Structures are given as structure tokens and as C-alpha cells.
Image 1 (cartoon, protein in one colour):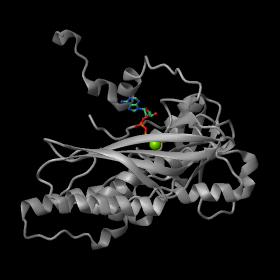
Image 2 (cartoon, rainbow, N blue to C red):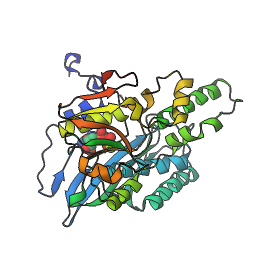
Image 3 (cartoon, rainbow, N blue to C red):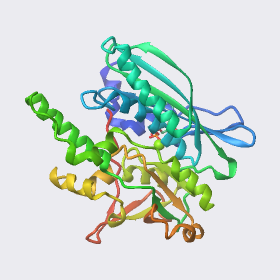
Length: 343
Ligand code: ADP
Ligand code: MG
């Protein structure tokens, strides 16, 4: 192909590329209820729906082994996949784990990754049922596929948000992003002078949120107990702005959120201040929080309005594809998705 016809991947971005490569995909089986486009695919398996999701973690792109302990890496690889299962209002059941390793890794090192994988499987009550093992020439790759199950009347897609629904979150955001900034800074200090020991004690919370995220399966149990089915749901892997826009696009609605209501921990605020990052940026445009962002109908609001574990951050309106934020200074600004740039 001549250079004239060459399209650079970064012109399209991650989401544009996914749209591009999946544009000719067709569904042939009637039990494929939902294919590409949500946190997990949905398959009719009789009484229930089975949901399936896959995610890949690459050394140098998604993790840096100079500060990512191997056990935590194994744990995180499972947690991020379970998070996509939870985002469908489903509970996880099985995972397969595929790894590609270079000869830089010893068996003991791989054992450590599996200690984390096994701990996460135990914690989320999932069975490790298969995978693949291969060698790699450039760095470690871990790819996980997870399945889950949900009653048909409880499935939550990205596409069900309706006008006047309340936009909710399961926990605070931005901490994982600020944790990463601290880790990257300490790495630089260490590289400049290997005698310097990283100072992480003051940043335990945010660094922990980066290195050992949890999937919010506890919320899926809570929804059952409260008798609530979110009208739409997504997990926050790329920052709240990007995820709200996904919900708006899939649901063909608009959204208004309030900067003041976005849950950000004081320790995240403090770190953002220290790094001269606007305090709203980590939550809106950071990533890897793995909290759930969901909408509930006005009728269900009564069931949760006093629930201290749910944060109400805004509401859904009719304007298709338009997400706006009311700032602390009461200005209205459009939300734009920065997401995570992998290309
Ligand atoms: P998430 O952030 O929830 O993991 P992604 O943004 O990675 O979701 O993916 C969005 C949708 O695109 C999902 O349905 C996913 O399965 C699908 N997808 C991503 N990459 C590919 C690919 N290479 N081929 C087919 N489908 C893909
Ligand atoms: Mg997701």
C-alpha cells in the first residue's frame, strides 16, 4: 500500500478503531442477544443470560513492573474483567487466563502472578477454567476472559438510560490516576539516584487504588437486596467523562452532572493539588477506578436516597449525545472524552 493510502491509528483513536474493525461484523445466532458495544456480550442460555467479557493487560502499556508487584498484577487482571461482568448487573462465575512471558521471568515470578490470580478468583467466587501459555519476545501479557450470569429481567446495558433518570456512582474516582502519578514520580527519582527509596507512605490510599483495584460485585448483591435494576450501567475504566458519553451515546440521551457531586476522596484532591492538576481532572479524565456508573429511574430513587454508599451526581435529559457538567463556579461546560490513550 502506498503511503498516500495509509491511515494512522492515532487519527482514529481506540474507540474509532474498534468501530472501524467491527463494522462488518454480523450476528448469526439467535442466542447472541448482544454482541459488540457493551461491557460484555450477552448470550441467552435458557433461564438466564450469560455475559462474556475479555481484557488484555500489556507490560509497558497497562502496567510497569518496576512498581507493580506481581501478585497485585495477577489480582488486577482478574478484577478488571470481573468489573465488566458487574457492569452488566451480573455476577462472575468463570475466567480463563492466557499469559505470554519472556525468559526474563522465573517460575517463582509466575507463581507470584498466580498467587494474585488465585486470591482474586477466591474473593470474587470465580473458577479458573482454562487459558493459554506462550512465550513473548517483548514483555509480559495477561489476557483474561470472564463469564457471568444474570436473570433476564435484571440485565443492565449501557443503552437503557431514560430522561429524568438519576446518574449514580458506587464510589470515589480519580484516586487510581493520582496513585499512578505518584508511582511514576517516585520511579523517576529512583532512576536518577538508586539510593533514594520511594516515599509512598503518605499516598497509601491512592497508590493502593492503582495497584490493587476491586470490582464492585458487592453492588450487584446490594441491587438484588434493594430490589433495583439500574436502567443503564458501565464501569469506570477510562474516567467519568468518557463513560458518561458512552452511556449517552448508547441510550441516545443527554446528561447533566455536577462537578461538586463527583465523589473524589480528600487524598486524591490533595495529591492533585500537589501535582498542580486541576482537582476535577483525575475523576473526569483519569482512569482505572473500576467503580460502577449507573442510572436509576425516579421510582427507584426512593429506595436508595438515604443510602450512604451511593453517590448521586446528575440526571439524564433528552438532548441526544450531549453531556454537560455544571462546574463549582456554576458554569456549564460540555464533557469531552479524553479516555486512556493507548496509541
Ligand atoms: P471496556 O472498556 O468495557 O473493556 P472496550 O472499550 O474495550 O470496553 O470495548 C468496547 C466494545 O468493543 C466491547 O463490546 C468489546 O468487546 C468490543 N471490542 C473491543 N475490541 C474489539 C476487537 N478487537 N474485536 C471485536 N470487538 C472488540
Ligand atoms: Mg467496561
